Amino acid sequence: MFYMLKDGLNSKPNFESSVLILPAISVGNVGQLACDLIISTLQLQKIGYFCPECFLPLVGSNPFSTANDQKLSLTSEVFHSAEHNITVLQFRSPLVKGKRKEFCEKLTTWAKVEKFSQLIILSSCHAFERKDNEITGSPFRCLISPTFKNLPTQLNWGVFDKKENEELFIPGGGFTKDLYKVCCDSELAVIVLLTYCSEGDNIPDAMLVLDQLNKWKEFCKNENTNWITPISLSHMFGNPVPTGIF
Image (tube, rainbow, N blue to C red; front, side, top):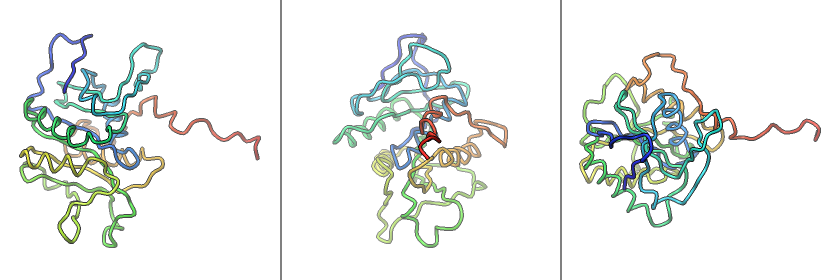
């Protein structure tokens, strides 16, 4: 499941009591953008890969480098910080069709074996699915497992509503629902932080989710946190339209 890098690491990090943060591959890629911002801002160290066999293969250049280097970015990477006591998974391609159940089971097994204290899933949901009484106010929501404890009440987070039949419905949320259910069945402490959004420039949506996460975990002590955008995000939309065509 977990494959540790051989270069630069003397031994496997101790994950016990570490907080595991991972993105769902969801609408607007909000969770993935948020994880890139965490990795870039806190300067987390890449330590290995997780379940690459469950994801479509991908190879790219280092998204966090501002200079020429020979490091590559692969489909499912693991970053860690002993200082902040967090471990971040980052996924850069979709799951292979039919691998969702296997991935969820492997992730929960790994989380239990390594004794992570909490799992935090960063996700998103289609904005057009908001009910009439949800249109006003913040689009941010949370979904908390029964075994999750010690969440500060002063956060005043809105709870993600279930449908009338009590069925959990997260359209555009990717594997969020399945992973949440498997974690609950395994009695893992898991919380989903998500926002309603639409496809487009979703960096502000990612920052909204991160700001709420930072209010709780205080990774950055400054109230006016400036999340550091990786250099790779400057290429999201390409060059501007040439004025000569008008």
